[in-house]
Length: 166
Image (cartoon, rainbow, N blue to C red; front, side, top):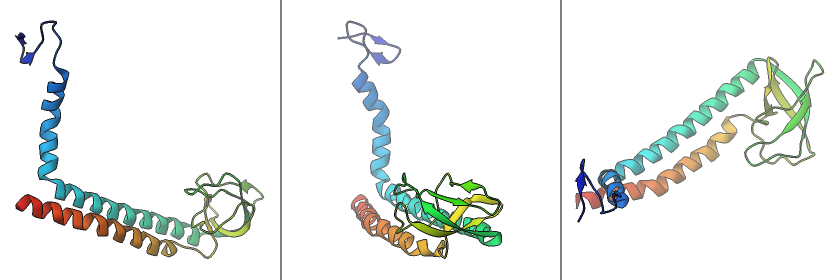
């Protein structure tokens, strides 16, 4: 067989049995995950809910900043926009041209080359949103997304919990 050196079984050539060691490391984690699967799934759903609420709260804070010190401009939607970020360019009252690094807030339905009215924070023109839109416009899609997460993960967590008790 092999030598036993400091608790690790070795082969005749002195190599450790890596797979056995990996199994001994991962095994307890796998058993823990199996016994706590329903709690893990519920935790993921709770995390998605909290992240959604934080996103909505962050958007509301940005809206409040813009509404407290508003500036208005016409912006052009630029090429290079993606699903996650719509790039616009506008000129502020001081004559400076601004292209917000993170794009414009609430950009749904905008097309490249389109001219759109924007509201921005005079103190920080990087905070810009499409005029007339707010965080409340995002509440319904966000609530739908959270409801979908719970509709999928809720029954899975319930099933896992019942299976564990059986």
